[in-house]
Image 1 (cartoon, one colour):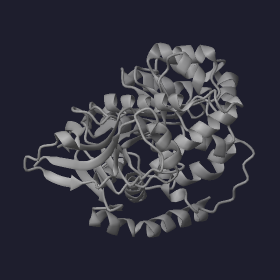
Image 2 (tube, rainbow, N blue to C red; image 1 turned 180 degrees about the vertical axis):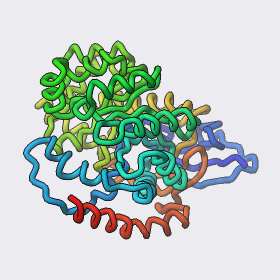
Image 3 (cartoon, rainbow, N blue to C red; image 1 turned 90 degrees about the vertical axis):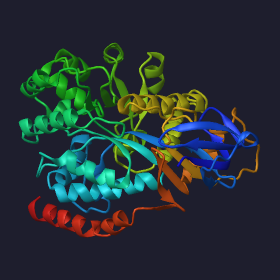
Length: 433
């Protein structure tokens, strides 16, 4: 039976309808004002004035970071490499598939509760590589999110296993809710020999890789290979159409021109960049060069609305101007993220229009000031994004959150076991590191 959300405010980052309806199954079929609604025995969802908006997309995350929350290890980093050595690489090499599964359940549940309906993950775990992405997908599917997966191929792990894990997943999982990308960690953890092996098998598959997150990545590439990171990757023919180059904080104009020429996108993660003190990307230059810039959160949180705030304020600080980076620029990035994810999954995302996927949020929002299509984004930004927790979440027309809580009792029960799994991983780290 078709579903109809009625008596709703509707805003999709472009058009505002003050009192309207949305008719949908897996995709949206009709949208209009309540004055034009005709009930034809639909399943009615009375929004009672709530705001309907599109589900959000995370363009780059690390689900494996879930069990880092509260982890206490010796930590006194002097640079970005120390952050990797002292925290993240200690964690990921102790994650087995049970830990991966439970981290996926917890992360996906939190994403859903924060209105994030599609994610692009970048995974690393060293204990059991083969079959890991399928295990992670199992957890994400139980919650119901759209997700793209990639394993961080690097010289830290058995190279051939990581290559095979990426290739098998990409070639066997491809539909409107699941995709694979070829994951690489970063230039600084991949030798020329490794890049040659990857090039020999990758074909035209797009890659998902960290690029020049810190200056150390460029310094390493120049010292060892005599080339900057993007030039090095391009010389190996690895930057295929649709590739995601993450961070790109320390890239120059030549590198940006290569990224543009190859049809890749840049995924920015401003909160993480500030937390790691690595600098901030020149987003406006990327936009000026015509490079799509998508928004991720680098696994530091599960909220994308909070990331939108940090991006906007971070750019004000970066450009030392309260006006150089505007909400219109933020909207350009939000739309680019929807466009990239939509193309990746083969669906239309980010608008409440006929033909678009029914990935929808119902949010309580009562404003003391007028709302229109012209100022709708400002209302979201200053009125909702600091604490966006939808009352209902739909993905492909299926409701997965109701009354602000997950509908899956089995997922809720399983996540109660996550602290036990995390404690086992932590004990393993403390015993062996």
